[in-house]
Image (cartoon, rainbow, N blue to C red; front, side):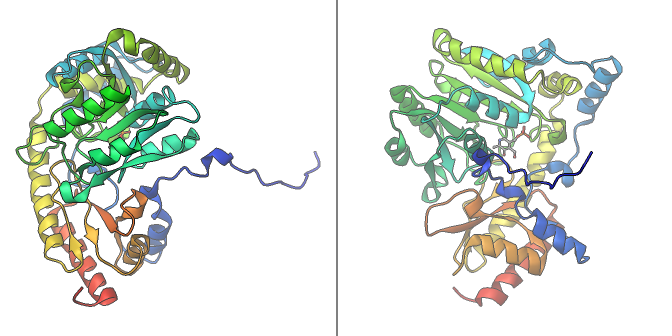
Length: 405
Ligand SMILES: Cc1ncc(COP(=O)(O)O)c(C=O)c1O
């Protein structure tokens, strides 16, 4: 066969706005590693990269499932044992009007399916700003224009209800609420959730309640599921094994649909069409769900203890460092300090990586109010690593911006 001249294969235009800034700096970090340096990673929320281990009884459950031959395709919505365990978890979360549950390859796939299953061209879904960027990536892939509402830094990063109200249009179909929040670590108050539910009720919106960090509450806040306060409302509550159960590589997540049965029926049918089209979630991994949700929860005590002291170290450092301030995170393992600097936070994180080999994510990657700068810290590393990283950031800021503000 004669070889014809190769023509460039262009990617689809709808991908132009698909971004995942958490991994944007990988090439800069690779360069630094190539030069023989070790990176201090404060960028990716993977507990397994640090001193956290998947609970052994979960590993045993998956191992047993594999040995028992659970290696074929699973039913598209998930295996019975897992679905029952998720329904049990919904009951413990006081979600009383459950209409459907399904297992997916991580919460990521649940989000993709549930947003795809709801929104038509020209419609929109309200997402928080700052945001966990997977939501905007999925919407960008669908060609949906972003409609974001601010989280209010002056109010402990709670959703800004006035802004939400302002942004709801006749074409808004849903609203995303991440609680506990990534990237800010905030936890929503009962009053806030009730007010959000009331807004959704008035405007006939579906609420996507991402509660993947619901067991990682660091102080004495109560985690309240939005769906438990609004049994009448269409709510999809997301959960999974990646964070609470320290198994992100297994890609196991789920969705719980609640609300009035007749109202959510067509939407649930749409979700199942998409679930069937992608065959099934990881089959043996689903056998860890019951083990996780109904087995010993001892690891959580240790995890929360470590996170609490790493959070305190982080916040104390931020709030005693010129040009930095930080709302104390109350859940998950992220802090989102504010930077007072004369340049963009994208330049800040890039130079920080090149000069001091500390990898963090720029606030502009998550979204922020115009005129402000932030960066996200993952405080999963141990105290010694964090102390080293914070000393390096302190030196960097002093060298670059001077001592005082
Ligand atoms: C808020 C939030 N939702 C979903 C995910 C993705 O979860 P999964 O690993 O289950 O796909 C993450 C991961 O960091 C997250 O922070």
